[in-house]
Length: 361
Image (cartoon, rainbow, N blue to C red; front, top):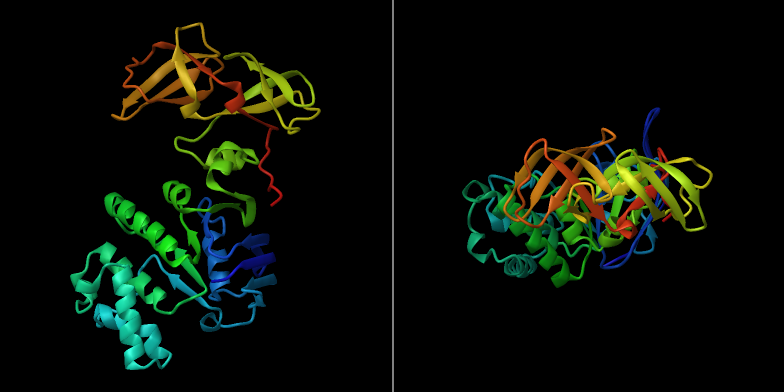
């Protein structure tokens, strides 16, 4: 397998700058997931790594080689597409072996590698079928099998599960996780699905407007977001944000409050130096209900949804801010009911207003 290094990588289409200077290192055998909103550049960046898009500026190294000018076939990569890209007139066996056929591999080599890929993906019984006889999940296995037989240095996945239903997506997500451990391969995976990102990744790279907002282990990004954008993007339901006033601060903490929030001290990590206003972030999962008037936050219930494993409550705080809270218990809240919440200030996050800058990485 191989390490990847992107050094100030940029992509422009005329005057439109899509990738704006990405610096990133992906370790040998690491499973890295690119996430971000639509149009952030994650698929474009993947296609640049694959060689399907030219690099406007910067350098891309795979396994210590600068590959900017190499065609896709010489980069040591294999790509699995959202659309599967398998040939309907060929059998599964022929589809999996297609890259080897083009490369002029012998019949024996093709048979051995196809058999190995079929064993790994548990699809030996499908080899003589045609794509029209396969389910969506089985077609995706064929596409992955075609990548495996090439023995690439790096696997690239471009939203490979987005065409599958929820149950099948979960099954295939687990299969891809097992495949990574079995092959010990370097994998880069693009998705808009946070569950895929959090469960599969060794490293998550959050992109926005062609820039890396933060890169690191999933739980590090979840618990220690570098900026407000990352805090709001990761997690479902999204983090709540409250505008607060700052009443004095020392080197580590600031006392904050608003019309709905009792004054509390929150660690600020130098983010709000010299500013009288700030934004307080609280995850819906980090609050608990208490007796009305006795908590830290006060509001009124708009809607309560009981989902079996949790209850999601939409409420309006006293200052007019919308707020979402989730509870593990099967609680019942009525519309219009007064509600008070408490939370651990150590689990809250403080940001400067408008703080969505890229983090150092």
